[in-house]
Length: 183
Image (tube, rainbow, N blue to C red):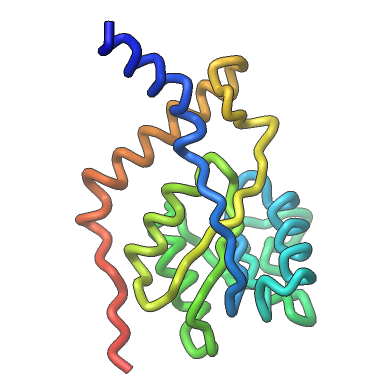
């Protein structure tokens, strides 16, 4: 009976466990490449206006064209593009590290989809230990809800994200090595 209770608790909280939102004021805000870039972009601008960072870096793909332009079209002001071609979050971490290099940055606030926040924090903290990382989770109402068992698309999102998180913890964590700053 106790085992069944534990399984029920794990089941009900399986979606909530994926979400971390520990936002802190940081030197820079980075919006990672995700499916809901528009929501992340507006949240990033809001956080920038509230003083959560001095500048906003937007990961934008350089290898895909939309309406004759890449996502990495230039922006101005305190919003800059971090060009990426990565296919995985870990690869994206390395490319974000390249964008941060040479900037006066010690702390970074990541803006990511809520269901992807715990894994993103683990990956970026592991790969780029030079920086202090925090997360602002973008609500993904269409793709994810904490009561994940209520909609088919939410179930799929939770199952896939748990697969990715377990793969990171047991395989990729050991394949992708942290960037060591030799300066």
